Length: 125
Image (tube, rainbow, N blue to C red; front, top):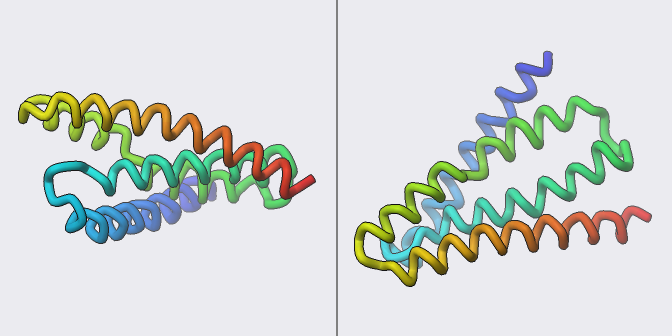
């Protein structure tokens, strides 16, 4: 049954990723992969929140972790796309944009995971 939860969550996460990236791409065109950054930050925020709710606080049954964390967030977040985007920015001579993009993803995602974890503990205490 866990395979079905992962598959269902993955389908929804992939559709959410496509929706977010297509909605945001007109804002920057091909100059900056804003959609990838947003889904990575959103995914990092949600993974910590869901971890607290499902694992630490046991407010949802464990199968929700398969559906939401492994499936939905696994398909939503895009580390492989992030890596390709960074490489293409670099290869196109946009070195400072590539460095900013890598730092924004890595540091931003670490920051939102920590923020979400603390918010979840504060709100659920």
